[in-house]
Image (tube, rainbow, N blue to C red; front, side, top):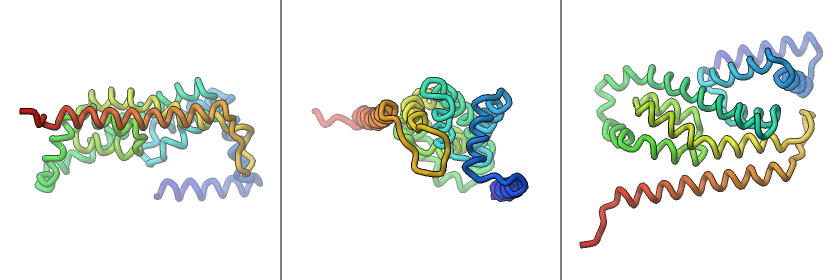
Length: 219
């Protein structure tokens, strides 16, 4: 809250001194990130460290597609999402250490143990369902789930959702103007299709996991 309050007041001060409208500010920032090395580095640093301020990854993923196109935007977003996910996991693990050593943890120990036995499948399903990234990252670290399983499931499971959202951003045509944007159907439709495939994959994996864990009734 302190960070966002400071950022808002700082922006108001800078905009007032320079007579900048919010849409003009957005255009200048977009041009700076897209056309300069310093802007790109700043964008990636913010992307990776955003878990510290809980800035939603979905906006940066869409922005990557908008700024850098469907191919490079997707690759940049994949790197940013996976790197920031590790940061979120580390934050959750750091702050969860004291809780795991407390008596209050005994109430959820059974759930944690169940998640540990199926960390890869659980994380993979959640990623395919485009579950809020930060919440899943923090929780995985908080409960000390397997880091290797978490990283692998995050990498695989984030691919469809990242493609979908990055291509959604890439489908936006024109610069920021404060009006409803126009979308390129050749990029928007594949984006929606990929999202549907991601949700379908989550359902199929969950059904398979349920079959494997449900005892057979055959005698």
